[in-house]
Amino acid sequence: METRLWHPFANMAEVKDKPFLVDRAEGVWIYDTDGTRYLDGTAGLWYCNAGHGRAEIVDATAAQMRRLDSYFTFGDFSNEPAERLATRLSELAPMEQARIFFTTGGGESVDTAAKLARLYWARRGEPQRVHIVSRRHSYHGTNGFGTSLAGIEVNRDGFGPLLSDATRVAHDDAEDLRAAIERIGAENIAAFFAEPVIGAGGARPPEPGYLEAAAKICAEHGILFVADSVICGFGRVGGWFGVERWGLRPDLITFAKGVTSGYLPLGGVAAAGHVADVFWEAPGSLVAHGPTYSGHPTVAAAALANLDILEREDLPGRAVELERPLLEALLPLREHPAVADVRGGVGLIAAVELDGELLAEHKGIAARMQLAIRERGLIVRVLGGSTLVVSPPLIITEDEIGVLGKTMAEGIDAVLA
Ligand code: PLP
Image 1 (cartoon, rainbow, N blue to C red):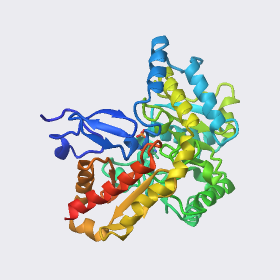
Image 2: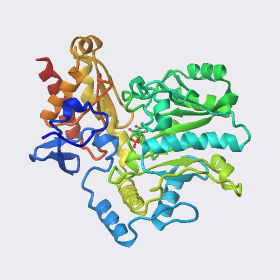
Image 3: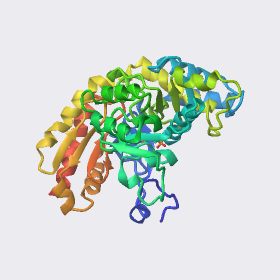
């Protein structure tokens, strides 16, 4: 039967007759409708940090739904779970007096941060500061601003004119950022967006010193530094917002995914006090922005229960402990003739990039490898048609990491045989 569900990031002509139906999940495992089990090597879409099937999150969500299913937080309306979550995130964020603006996902958070950055400058009397700089290979979601900022070319293709005030710089060369600032003029730039570890653009940890240098250049020019921690947050690369290990103190941080481990959709922006105060300390200063479900109480209850688990089990610490074993499980593939590079070692994100000649000779080979790996019981993702990426739940064991490495190698070999 042909599906009526329009899948995101899909070639529907290829998948419409054979959707892969996921039926249930437990821990690091997902099961299809035939009952076949797969190791969730990607934690869903980089989000299921606490693992699947956590009764604690389910119970907290159900209890909140029975009490107050939903209510909005526009104007002076609020609710206790949203308040508690904002306070908790504010205390965890590496910034002074952080204020938390909730959205329903990562893309909305990126757009929120971009709009807040521009409005910040407008309210400070510098309305020409609208330009936004991002990095090649970066992914900032598929909403309006995020699409314009995309450092993955294909994500901008075909959508017509996007923001003209957006510039991309080399992803790991701070001098290129400096040169772009000189060209555009700092007085025209609102913000610089950077993922601490680039995720969807190929699982690329930063070159040592790069992020610190970029943050310093932004500070020198008064440009707001926005860390897009949608993937990196909530333990994935260690720490709560994924920037702590580089000692960064961003002006704005976008987050989503791991904040609820994906149990319910939630995102947000943490704004440092010096940014938020421009709005919070100015009576009559309306910010005409916000999605309907901002501060949704049931979603907030899920996030609070998830944070309890991440904290109690020190899953951010576990991600750092396991980053080396994960990289080592994949490193033997570096010698493989089909492989150009193996990346990882900063948190539980790792990638195997396939050889360029192989990719040119065999169109769609990465997708075939993904399928072969899945047939052997492991979920991985293909990025950019060239790279196989893993980002398992932070509860994965070392043994399971071993299985992941072995299965990936077997799937790659099966396609080449
Ligand atoms: N920013 C980053 C760094 C992401 O990785 C993603 C999604 O993968 C987004 C933004 C967009 O998030 P969402 O898909 O929830 O809109």
